[in-house]
Length: 395
Image: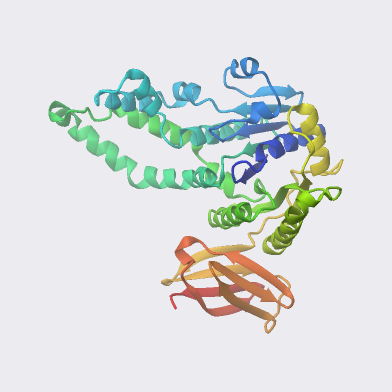
């Protein structure tokens, strides 16, 4: 099974591109699911489905054609399926503060519930071998980072905190509940957490396997959008996911020559050059701005025709190796860059703002640094086995 994550800044058009990709994949023969992981779902809207028809379903995948289904995670239904004990306890605690039942039920929807529910479905569909490809329409960048980091965070909690917390509360609960104004969570609460963790088992390995999971970053040719795309590229790499494609959406088409758009065209031209230089050798696709809103299956088919050639396979594995990685070793940080064609003597590097710039001959590579390394400076570099290792320390 293949998993394709479409991520980017809110409003760049990733839902339409994810939906169009799903249609193309189904057309060339893949059993495909497009799943929305964005709490502000718009996937059904992209297909122009009637709200009563779509949202009246059980919350399971909705069939678009013989080989394509779409799925918007319904958190209220997921609470009944997976989060019942946890939600019940949180609601009971909130009620003691004096707020109404309705407010308590709303506040009991904790951050991350929707993302974890989506992960459980991905894991379930993988085990059932129900689909060949799952296309994930992710939330805006910050929430996407939370989505991909959750398995690691949850595994750490389950290994290091959960057993002691459950054992301790089991011992003190009878006494504590007599004197505490709020009852401690029952053991069924912890049983629910354990069941959820079991349903997520293996999802972290799935996301970090480049032969299974690839990230497609959607951007627009605008300065602020590009900066967020660059940050997303860095942080997906930090979490071990492979970005194998950049899609630049809403590029002014060549036939637009009106004087009103002259500055826009110049600005977009500069940004497009930066995108090609920054993300190389990752493949960059350009999608022209349409003359109409992309809404409904017919328009999505039109978008798919622009995005992909007739027999192009979006599920093909094109990158399995991260272009760069960040590590901490012996008290200092390192940036490791794959330079398969470089030789010693032709590599140069310098720091510019929060970027490390690597030069190989006439080629230049910009590497955005994570927050923990942004204030550091390169002090030493070695090139061995086609890998450039740059030590970063405080200047």
